Image 1: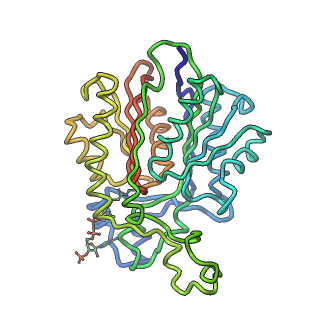
Image 2 (image 1 turned 60 degrees about the vertical axis):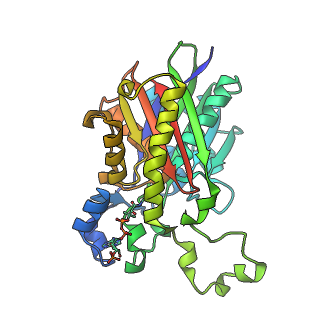
Length: 334
Ligand code: UT7
């Protein structure tokens, strides 16, 4: 029986650190407000001279390949999760393929926001189990700093997001009982506009799609109904973790490490309390990076692994909730 194992993890974040104090110079906010409501102390914002979604993803990939002792040429397929692609089209998957000098291999783009990495992992897992590919790169990368309204008008949204990239190399394995045990994917499109960017969307009539016709450019920035997202997130995180445990007939005490999508530290803490998990079993790094959407889980996985918190034989649970709404979980026997 073939299973899919994550054999290498890497991440890359822009050098530019933006503290809460830095944001308070751009908008009416304070370090105290941001820390109390989100747990975030700083995030990274891209440098336009240096960083692109595709090149950050390439750096994360090289780190993952090096840690796995794998040649980049051995990657057979790319799955790229992002909601902030370098271009409107084509997706960033092909740009990453070009950055890595990989010729001809397929590249698939996934636009499932905060759940994008788990959706990507799920697709990789299925491709591996059917024997279609043996080695797949799954990345999540975002540059969100340029789609935030960094004025007081956008303060309730802008303070939570950041930029970065994370990568996982997923490989076929014959080792019984190890690897991705299951993935669980959900969506509820009724809430699409609770967290979205409208433009440049194809729903506008031709005349309105001329840039000079769009007088209110706020539709090019992230819109989020924070309260509604928060409320749904806490319920769905718990539900989808429960689903993963149940389908594998294991219990919450069996989890060695839970990596929740880094949406807001309050959401992670609420979840931890509701599952009754001790601090050492829940990994959070939102304090340093903010919410990096599709990049958040692979960055956290990469850091947790580097800190020695993920070891062979351990049970790792990933869970995410975000725009769509979409939510997902994965249970992995490392
Ligand atoms: O990863 C994708 C999924 N996203 C999420 O999971 C995000 C979920 N939502 C959240 O994390 C929270 O809703 C936020 C952190 C975004 C906002 O926190 P909140 O506790 O829901 O604040 P709020 O929007 O209800 O605003 C409360 C007050 C308001 O003032 P009044 O009307 O009570 O006087 C806001 O104007 O705080 C004010 N406010 C701020 N004050 C200082 C909003 N943003 C700020 C700010 N600085 N940055």
